[in-house]
Length: 193
Image (cartoon, rainbow, N blue to C red; front, side, top):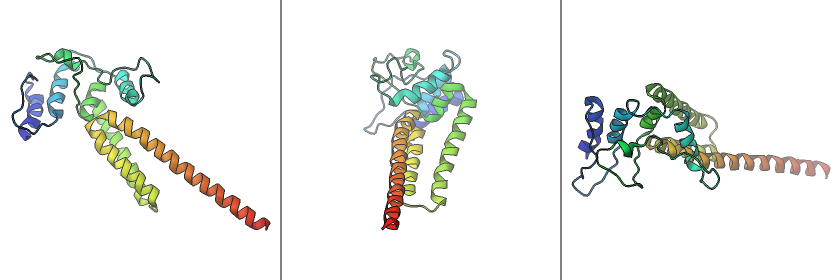
């Protein structure tokens, strides 16, 4: 299994041409993150330019349905299928890690900035537990930590989970606001009696 993970990683450093047509023996099937990152590194920026703001827009808009946002770009902006040696069907799609997606957006500088973004988000999550941690903080930390781990797999997951985190934070804020107003109303009604 590790041989398949290192196949793409090895091709990244040795600049091998990757053929995606081979079948893997055995029943265990794994993803090819390093494999496609090695391939993307050979395609971008030599044969296809970095995606830039279009790549960021496609990641951010991936969680929004096309009925609400018509004309949004396809998630994988770089048409890797066009560069593969063996043809793939129209529905074929690949997933590479967040590092690969940052590289497609803007090269190694974008990888550095994306790593800093993940670090800031992790630091924010840790700050939630330093404060007096109530049940809401622990729940919010759990969802944020899960989002960061899943987000390393693909940035699209951060967008989808980010909507959940935003809704969860909104519900927690609304709950705290309503409880505070209820306490103010109760105290005011007790003082008037």
